[in-house]
Length: 220
Length: 220
Image (cartoon, rainbow over all chains, first blue to last red; front, top):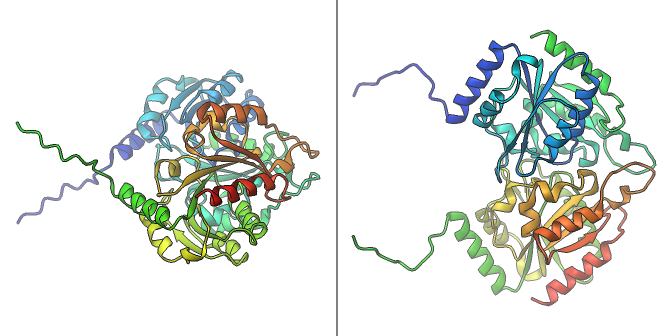
């Protein structure tokens, strides 16, 4: 029997679109960050504050992924940033083909940075490449400090981890969250992960995150 | 062309095992509740308090679903309740076949109520029947009051919704969470859903939940 080596990795449909997106973003020198967390960790609040406070430095557009509703896109639209809503109609993560369509509907030429806000889910989105430049994990302190140990994939794959809602620590209520444990567990999974302690609500700690974003855009 | 009507619905492998589990539970008159929420909503804390405070009234066993680690099973074991840990090794929900195996390893004859703590994920677990008597949704107030609108499936399918971490409301910190909006949205999806406002940490509001559990066990 002859073996024919076609010398090419056979890609899944999702990987093919992810590759297209990645090539498009590289060609156009755009930073694209895929934000992943549990529902309610504060992704949209992080985005609205980041867009507003960085508006004189970098131009941001957003691809909003949700199972249903355009509640989050409406919140982004209020900042006047361009936004495209994707409804997955029940599916638990975004697909690269959906991001491909969304990129066609954003004014990419005018933007420096495109955020993808994935469906709120700490598990599935980490398994589907979208062609992004990098993933950003968000964990809020009320979710507990055992999450990197229990849900390792997203922490292992992310460029940065934002530990959000730090305004709830030591504020007269008892929130048990050992920041050092989370840092240590995240670094065990991912030595180079950038860590930011923030409150998207109060603005505390956001400056370091902004500096990292601006630096990341400039170094493209 | 002849059409052969075999008069039988063809079940998926998961549905077949779910049916087996359901028949087993009905035959043995056991209540089995499948608890579903985002990561960090407080499922394990609800369970440990419920087990301890109901221990003279009903005997509870637990099937713990996690992607990795047995952190949660260890917390349950500390209450002396029987517990079986299932690690899904990356999968985002439990399957009925896994619950089938776990039921064989629990002392079912000694128990009144079996809780299944599903993988922390507000999306996928709601699509996989395990043969349970009913589903229980948990939403913590820090996750935001838009969750029933944005993730409707689990709220539509659950017998009860526990709104957890109410100790964080009005406690000197600002948590924006409109309980009436959540109640209204949940009831729009599911007219008969039972609603419990609780703090599993402080114990506030847990009595109504316990009464409902005892009544549910007794009415089997």
